[in-house]
Length: 302
Ligand SMILES: [Zn+2]
Image (tube, rainbow, N blue to C red):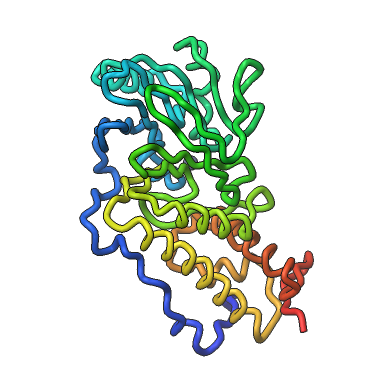
């Protein structure tokens, strides 16, 4: 006897939005170069921490005006000596010294090295989360512009993936988006930490900046049509919401059953993350008065 929940007629016909990146020539998973100059202002250094959640590994970015002799380190990533070696070499290649460390959000794959490396380089950490910034750090405020390393860096609030998430807009018009947008696939909005409503507002905020490129926390740089990717991300959330509402249309279901059907094609190891995303989507629908989430299952309201 199978305990797979019944799938309503028409569910399989729901059309997922097309990912514009499918037709782009992006490097495959595991094919990102360790160090790459993306533009005069930015060098990307890949951390050696690949996984299901971190894709190729965490992207650490060096940002600075060429010739300034300085660079800001964005998202130092794991506190790993091999990664520090890579970053140190990339700094030398840019003929720059590290003048500050900035962090997009507190998740460990981005923030772990922030305080140890701030000691190592003798610089301060800037982040929205005071615990990440540390006692001598700088707590960043939404909308501020920092003058660092001969250039200016705009602080763009992008809550949603988690409460303290920031993106950084640089002078070329590119935006360093952390885990708000990923180079491959879609981002996880965690629950209860994340917030789908805030996430969608943040997508709109980045869209309105008209970014020339998106440099994500994981995966390749998105330069071809950043706005199309942002459109796809919004459509993807809408699609998931549609799927949930359709599954609940006939019968109340536990969250695990929703995940089992919606993420049937995704490896089971990613189901815990999928459940987080589903719970985050349900929290939005519950706030809108459309579903009721109880311990024994989720049902439509009305
Ligand atoms: Zn991450």
